[in-house]
Amino acid sequence: MLRRFLLAAVLILVLTGCSQDQRILERVGYIETAAFDAAPENKIKATVSIPLVSQYARDGKTTDELLSTIASSPKQAREALSLRTSRIIASGQIRTFLIGEELARRGFWSYLDTFLRDPSISIRTSMVVVEGDAGKIISQEYPRHTKTANYINKLLQKEYSIQSLPRTSLYEFTRDYFDDGEDPIAALVLEKEKDITISGIALMRDDRMIAKLPWEDVYLFMLLYSNLQEGEFTLTTEHPDLKAISVKAVKSKRRIVITKNTSGDYEANIYLKIYGSVDEYIGNAKLSTSERAKVEKLVSEHIVSEALRVIKTMQRHRTDGIGLGKYVRNSMSYDEWKKTDWHEMFSQLPVKVHCSFYIKQFGSYFD
Image 1 (cartoon, rainbow, N blue to C red):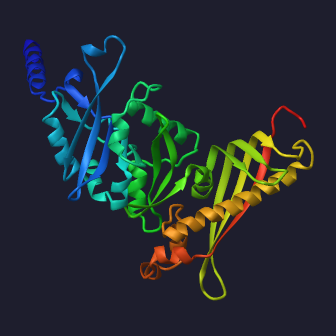
Image 2 (spheres, rainbow, N blue to C red; image 1 turned 60 degrees about the horizontal axis):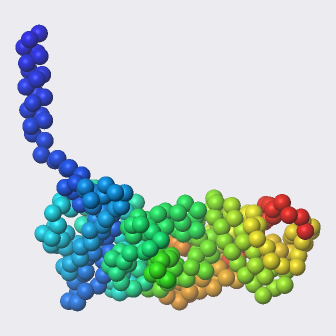
């Protein structure tokens, strides 16, 4: 019995003595946000935000350590930044990658290699393109927000949760990059009036930003992109019966049908069925009467015309962010698809949008 006790004690001492991965919080610099911008000679400028955990934060205030350098790769940048901080740099807490627009237009897939290989980095890390300088955004202080890195992350997560913005994480970006039937997208932000605002969606072809959709068109993109469970949108028209309407608790279903016409050319039909509750309405119709059907029809027609405009924008720039290519690919043979230049075909593809909008509720006020 004594032998077993001594053996157990020795094992405990040996095992604890072998532990080399001791990460004391005050000595580790966990990167929360990493920003990358284009630099001369095909290099990148890397800027990172590291929250400081030390005795200096005891008064309730938090401080970020900002580091920036120019390098040929993110790994080289990390090594250079490590020489300038007293903390051990760790990547396991990265929440957001910010890519400057110039670098996004140049192409940045090769710089993602290190993040995809690092198991400590979550594939749910948000991918964001900044209109302007990405490093400048996280280097600024915003008076109404305590920590810039936290501010950006919470802003994105809030929009993801209410389905006002498509989730654009490292996982989704990588999946769509390798899918020859769909192009990647990324959230687009900019600094505006001492705040950071989501300004739209960056449309990609492979890993290069080709065009952008403004925020006003994002709800249309969302309807074309996926099914919604709790979205919301606001639209305005010149029609006296539909000057403005805000709809919340939006549930939508998207169905895509690919057919061949008599000439043997492919056509795409997108069917949208949308249900929502009216949060605000400005117009001459009375929603508590049969006139509600007129408003539903006007909303449906508006969504059809505006959705087609968004699709035309993507076709003009030859970038398929809504994934029509996956449906076309499934309707033809493997050999036929491999011979197809999808971006060229997409730019010429006839697309029709069909929409049925239904008002579930219109509030406690009765017209």
